[in-house]
Amino acid sequence: MGEAAPGTNLWSTTAGEMLAAEPLKEDARADAVIVGGGFTGCSAALHLAEAGLGVRLLEAQSIGFGGSGRNVGLVNAGLWLPPEQVEQTLGQAVGGRLNAALAAGPELVFSLIDRLGIDCEATRSGTLHCAHSQGGLDDLKDRLRQQLDRGAPVELLDAEETAARTGTQAYRGALLDRRAGTIQPLAYCRGLARAARDAGAVLHEQTPVVSAAREGDGWRVATPRGSVSAGALLIAVNAYGRPMAGLTPQAYVPVHYFQIATRPLTDNLRRSVLPERQGCWDTAPVMSSFRLDAAGRLLVGAVGSLEGPGARWHRAWAERKLAALFPDLSGIDLEHAWCGRIAMTGDHLPKILRLGERGLSVFGYSGRGISPGTTFGKAMAAYLVDGDEGSLPCDPVDAHSERLAGIKQAYYEFGASLTHAVGER
Ligand SMILES: Cc1cc2nc3c(=O)[nH]c(=O)nc-3n(C[C@H](O)[C@H](O)[C@H](O)COP(=O)(O)OP(=O)(O)OC[C@H]3O[C@@H](n4cnc5c(N)ncnc54)[C@H](O)[C@@H]3O)c2cc1C
Image (cartoon, rainbow, N blue to C red; front, side, top):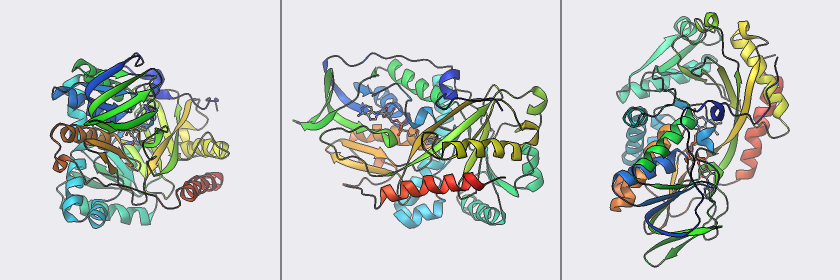
């Protein structure tokens, strides 16, 4: 098998959308300042600028550097947690509001892509949640019932229909969600940023915020070469936050997820492997995913870090998994391998933190983020305009802590390493 160097992120080599922004080098004023240039920050910047506010968005590295430029690209409806569990944890009213907002997430994402002309390999042929075992199939049946109760256009495929749609016999069935689809995530993120700039937002890359504090009626954030004073502040750094004096670091469990990508499949193989190009993930306790990109590369991903001691097990497992799913692809050249960090919370629900008047921080999408980041970013913009917490998809809290975050992080990585060391042999 051809060697793919870790760190070669496929998305940064194939993004149709390009973007460059100058670092901040002055003391500026704005109506709102946003820290973090991922889906959340870029969506908020876009919607604030479209509402006529003066916006500055400050990104420590480049737009899409965090999870937004590294992910699988599955545009899912809802969270990873099934909707009944969301309502049990948050109560019917708030849980129902969050479920409804995120059920509409793919529609928001794909309509923005259309309206703003974002060049991001958008494919809306649904996603497949694939049952790896009888227990997995039972879980999908329960998810099906919950989704149908809420009017969602989902369908449970049997093993034969799943094999026809995926090209592999490995699964006992799959839940097809027709609201969902796939994108090139970095291109989508850059497209949101470009549209925000077209609407009047000022973007700065290579601009790490080093402190944030109340100043008069508003906020002041400082960077190495300048500052922004603004009436409203949004922190949207999720699992990639750098320390900022004046703010307590967000509490979450960092979980790594990696992907490998093959060279483009031949036309012959593409007739049987994911012929309708659904994005897929499975019900296994150590989850994995697979999808095609626009050029026909197959991407396989799973929980695990390519930067730690488990890296060689994860990579070797991914190659075995690829061959087990699609024997015709055994030994195919791999062109790319990369990984990123997910912000998990203990209850697997996103958090909105109140920082002070018209100051919010949002994080903890727990494995999702394309639809949630876009949805939360839009909702944050509405809140920062009118100050009405009813605009938010869930209620903000004054503080959030995570118990045993370090131990849980080690547990996820160790569990994934162990599974990958022994799995699919
Ligand atoms: C490998 C992987 C696969 C995933 N797959 C999927 C998927 O298929 N579907 C899905 O919906 N979700 C997926 N996710 C989750 C999703 O990518 C994230 O939830 C989402 O990108 C979070 O977006 P964000 O804008 O909140 O944060 P991010 O995209 O992480 O952006 C935060 C930004 O803040 C910047 N920043 C941090 N500190 C500072 C500072 N002090 N000053 C200035 N800037 C700062 C960072 O540089 C970063 O660019 C995946 C995540 C990973 C890692």
